[in-house]
Amino acid sequence: MLKRKYGNRHDWQRITKRRYAQSYLDAESFKGYITLIDMVKVREPLWITYENRELCLVDDGYMWLQQFPFGKNHMVTTTFDQNGNIVQWYIDICQAYGTDNGIPTIDDLFLDIVALPTGEVYLLDEDELEEALTTDVIDQKIYDLAWTEAKRLLKEIKEGIFDLFNLADLHKKTLEKTLESPV
Image (cartoon, rainbow, N blue to C red; front, side):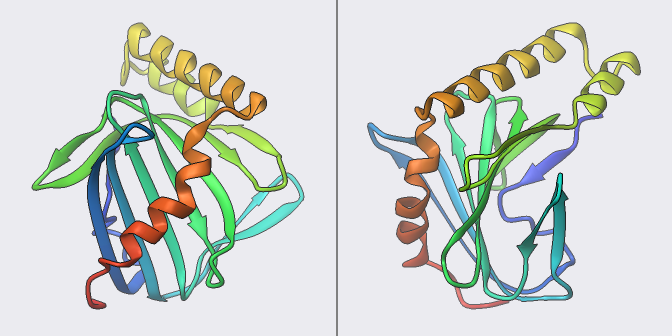
């Protein structure tokens, strides 16, 4: 079964106090949902290691901007630290997004891409995609879709033409104005 992810991450217990905002945009530069999670207070920070680089992805004051582009097979999460600096871009390869009670959702297709502001790019979870195919969680058509999307995105990132990275600050500023009170 594919893992469904929600734009508001309502089920994530690590965040103990949060603010949330979302909007649907229909502009020439972007069409789809954008969401923003302000992690006012977290139970504990989340650190991850890519090769020899250790990064904090969740901590008090961090924000996650998620971009759900209409008709695409990916969703981008931009992690901002407490000072508003971009820590990473995380791209989930997915089936086209949907909504559940007005909240954007994706069905994760296992492959992920991480891009760092330093220019480093990592392709993750190829083994999970292979296992999903061999255990009949997905079929060959979905497997091929995931690889096609990942390869296309890696090429765009390498060529510097993946536009969602450039829209992250603008989308964050748009949503910061509408953040709800902490819960």
